[in-house]
Image (cartoon, rainbow, N blue to C red):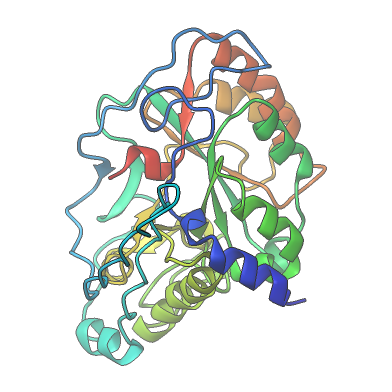
Length: 324
């Protein structure tokens, strides 16, 4: 089921939805939480120390053109909210294949060069990230989980696969319109990102540079059209990469995201296991979990873990709040 024309028009008009606009009701500074926290009376909110993110190696500069200048603000009336820049033309498939076609990967797995696996050194906040895999990985929508985050004003980055978006147009529209959430790229077909056909957890990876490009750029184009600007972060299916593939991600203007704490074991953990993993997540961690398996242990596990963390004064950020 495709997205409605109304969805496309509404989201294209609100292009800032894909960006990192300030959270509604937030206290001073990006990445802090609103003062109202129903789950627990949290103490003072901590701010994020923005230094160098935890990443295995320096990534390449995006191979994209500069964005055109924005239109001037109207001469009269209330101050206008600046429109997001028009996305620069994407790097073409042929160019990427020519550039990386002969490169031989030397690393493979969850922690390879170019993958962000934690927040910047000294960060006192935690980033919650939720994948929606789509297709055989599941196209469900965990409304209980999202309602929990909203009720407690806990921001998160949502990595959405193209097939999940197509299967959940109304839910996508609501999530993209909620400033509590950042929308990120979880690939076109939810494949591990490889230039040599590596697989993970029984899921076949992309077989060459061209397929790696398609996995990144296909869903990036969908999100750019819907949100008015490209996503800033990409997470591959299974979060596995090789080091050539991460260079392709960077060259296409996105940042490859991994994780520090596996919060729900690929949506297989019980509620008790989820609670244990999430409750133990340290400041500076990126927590991965899933929002496409309603009825599983993820939502009740987070519901059990978040009250204590909030009561301790832990604050949560979207990736875009913590990573410049």
